Length: 404
Ligand SMILES: Cc1cc2nc3c(=O)[nH]c(=O)nc-3n(C[C@H](O)[C@H](O)[C@H](O)COP(=O)(O)OP(=O)(O)OC[C@H]3O[C@@H](n4cnc5c(N)ncnc54)[C@H](O)[C@@H]3O)c2cc1C
Image (cartoon, rainbow, N blue to C red; front, side, top):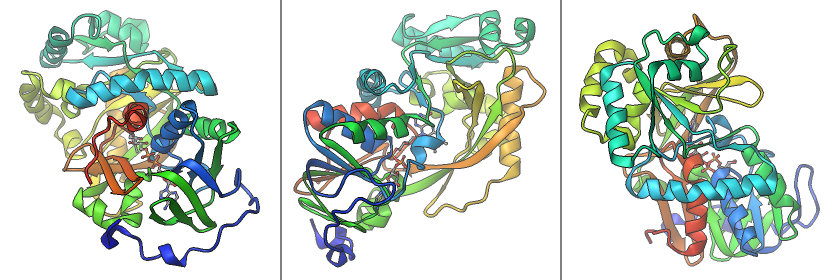
């Protein structure tokens, strides 16, 4: 590892502690694989490694997952990807299903409903169906879309149609990473060290606030906080923090589908739609009627949780360091837009939070070999849930391209 990537604190790390500490599962030692970060990227890698018979230690500074992986929609948004990301997302799907079966976490083959409320929106969906085929993009009438949204009396109102993307999965972000972490800790070859911050890494050794952990292979899966450990690598990839306004609302009585719901602003953000011939016209159209939504980088979308509440969001603002404040106008714009899609006057909000994930203008993935046996894997786009198990499989197959 070059000195420019070695954190200054590495040599100051204390000796290995072998006592069990509150909130900590297992004791530091040696594993085939050491993974820094118990978010979905680290835990998908841990699941894949254990499935292949490798021993794994996962190290996280917190005492439960609280990062991007628990703050999102739990939407494995496979069909909305294009090119290499689509292939990786498709690879992720069986991994999620295997993990759900092994761990008992909820993963529904519920697909995504994309709502069309103008002829241009419907044209984008038809163009996607023409490219991908009717099995991958099932067009829906306005009345069918209204029924799926649970609108009163299946009132189509402003709907002109929609599409169901059946390959997509839904998971519960509140339980997926915690459930996977519990499963990892329960495996004979697995352990999770909570409340243990990593301060430095060198080949074969991870230095932590509780001593050193050793492994033949080290994976750094710390998401947007890569700059705290490897500032030069993060700067080189222009990693930024993207903050998103999110809320959880009571689901309107008729809204019962497990499918995630996307709208016009979503079509402008995901490549499968944004690369269609009618997408430029769609952007002009949305600019004309909903400029404020574009100004806050909105992806107006929502997804129901098994408890009957619905996750609603989101906006996108990019900074090097994240201000903690949630703008009320942003929240109002998003929730009003979602209420209109659901055909209700307003949503009753039960919870709000700010999500943060890694973004970059350099591309959606940072896969960097930092030293022999040391690799950083950060998804620098808002699709880490979607790609997680595909990335993990590719990592252990040796097919994930990395830069040195
Ligand atoms: C609001 C929102 C909506 C989203 N919607 C979607 C969606 O619909 N579909 C989708 O696919 N993706 C979505 N995403 C993106 C997705 O959530 C992220 O890409 C993904 O969760 C990143 O996972 P991660 O494991 O890299 O990061 P995180 O979940 O942030 O985990 C990183 C972990 O590393 C730990 N860590 C950091 N530094 C250290 C250290 N020095 N020592 C020890 N531990 C450390 C942290 O404590 C944390 O637990 C969304 C994200 C947000 C915020």
